[in-house]
Length: 112
View 1 (cartoon, rainbow, N blue to C red):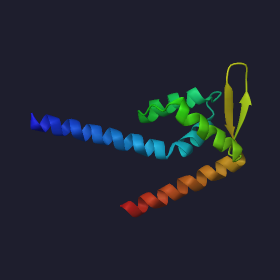
View 2: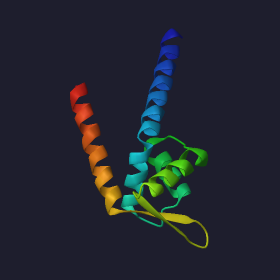
View 3: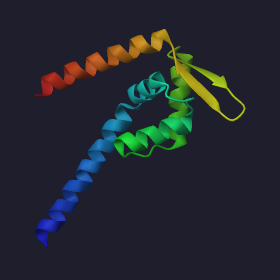
């Protein structure tokens, strides 16, 4: 019984760590998702892709301010369609995404 409780605690701890990592990197993940541009990329598309890839469900309240901030900083552009606002990444956003990825890779190399 104790082993089962420990395993459950380990799974919960790992889930919490994964969720924290995704939330800490959500700007980078959102930029990458918009960059992929597989379909018109609206906020709920981004939420769905993050949930599918990382098993973390973000609330729209967590994502909308981020998208607004990215747009104000010129990293993405938003266009209102009939049904939703869709986003595309700008050249400045692509450069920022590359810089973020390089920075995180450097950090991870130093953790080993």
